Image (cartoon, rainbow, N blue to C red; front, top):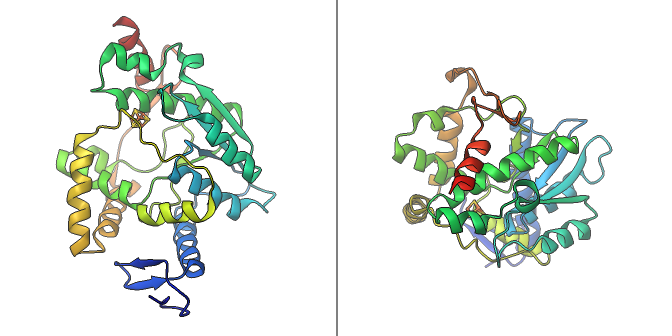
Length: 296
Ligand code: SF4
């Protein structure tokens, strides 16, 4: 097939746009979508220090490459990468993430659950089983990332979440009847470093293609504890439905954004943990998780 824009050989067909794209026009289209997300949300401003949460997988490696290309020449914005090693055997070799960041000349720092909390995720799963592994992992990783971010003056966290992730989250929240999550604004609570998601308008398969085109040595392994049954079901339903109605994921993401408009939401926001001083409710979820796993 030929590119719909220039008649070179196409490397991608976008069902939702009806376009065949060559490598050059794919890159242009991809980066335009990511720049639009940043521009519309005013996510990057002069003086920012942006840290990519770099797992070494395709999404975070792609977002690091994109931001390096976008910001590399700017003197008013700093870019760095942070890798958290949760301690999951056979998964997440921090050396791969380090090599990716170093190849791009991006400063890289790392931290481990073992050093920070005195326990690895493997050990937590050994005590508590796999049922809540993602919940514990997410809470502890977020708190650790936030602490490192403050140490390095980070003002924005960049994540590789893509259109599929975002659309799945909206549908999952709808299926759970979780009106709070559906309408919670995107702004972060005081004390938490705001998150940005430059690829939220880019389908997962296009992020994978972008990573294959630009990044060497990213990790293809999946986490052995990834087992969110609802997300797996929703992914299947959504992929099937989107095959017949190609704009569905965009519709869901647009719906999610419309529901999260700040003026529709009230709430007093989070406070600071009485025990560790991190932003949260009365006692933060990180301290609750650590209590639970240490007690067992
Ligand atoms: Fe942690 Fe779950 Fe992600 Fe594995 S899949 S790294 S357990 S959040």
